[in-house]
Amino acid sequence: MIRTGGVDRPVEISASGRLEVRITAADVGKRVSVRRMTDDGDTVEKFTDTVGVLTSWDDGVLLITRRTGERVRIAESMLVAGKVVPSAPARRRGPAASYEELARVAARAWRPVESERLGDWELRAAAGFTRRANSVLPLGDPGVPLDDALTLVRDWYGDRGLPAYIQTSTGAEGTQELLCAELEARGWSNEVTAELWIGALAPLAEREAPEVTLSRTADASWLGRYQRRGVGEVALRVLGSGPSVWFATVPGAQGEPPAAIGRCVVDGRWAGFAAVEVDPAHRRRGLAGAVMSALADRALTEGASAAWLQVETDNTAARALYAGLGFAAHHAYHHYRWTPGEEAAEGAGVAGVERDTSEGATATAADTSGGAEMYRSA
Image 1 (spheres, rainbow, N blue to C red):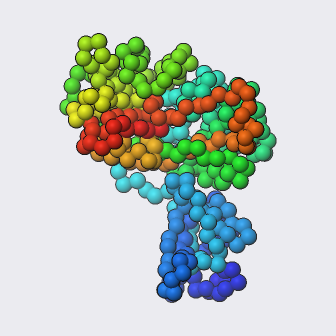
Image 2: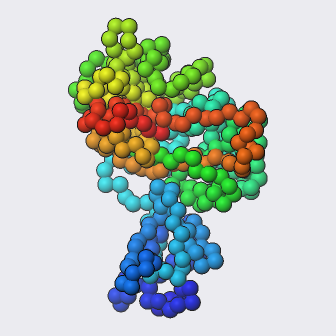
Image 3: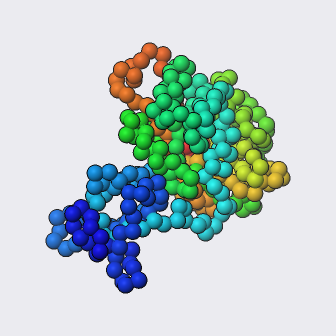
């Protein structure tokens, strides 16, 4: 028996067969599974389960962050059962990988033109081209109190005429659910949520593919299909960054932009796919898979064995494509932006950062089974 909210409740099943609440405020920061009663006005008691990281337990209210980044508030008085669970479920297929390994690999695939260390945080800037190259990557301790670190972050980006972004992640061992909660409590808003997916590389290279040309540079033809607007010198530097970068092109009709393009960064055992785009006029030909197959084959020759890509959570067409290619979600990531109010939004000289979409892995939806015209990933 445990007392919650002033009520004694028999509250996970114990050896004696009774439900128990086995968590306390001392478990903040741990992954937990809880069962609570629902209050929907029904006279029959109903229950719902929530799994995630316990990010706070204050004033009789628990805050749990799910793997997607969604935050669930639960009144202590509604708890029926609860326990600490392993920090991340074991993967049943695909390559094993830690969050930190993937975060560093993904960061090296989109290098900024300027960066600075703040303890274990990296402040990155690239004149606003992609949030990933214009946000803080907080892999550890900033070396100063959080409020001081956030002030330094805001000032650093303000000096460059850029909005202040911090890239955080949820849903895997070592991700930053606690930092997400701290940012939201301080007025930072989650502007974009996406996921990083991983899969085995070899099956991608086994697909039949039409003519695909590979190059070390994004030439004028490749850029003619690239959906990103305003690609200048800085953008080209970011696109060309990474340990071993390859650009794929499926030629279009004479005088026309390519039918499909893609980008891959090979980094040790990892191959990261992005900017997979297909001309809507060339639907139902499997060109997205063809581009990825050609890039995967090249990555295999360089010693890679695993693949990753990033896709937005609401992009059902892209998610269906990648699931069909053997990919599965590893963790969610979020871009938190400092939004103090209208005064900051109207500040002179503050540049915008475009949505991280077309530099992610994209393809025409009808390239698989029809649906929306264009896949978009983060």
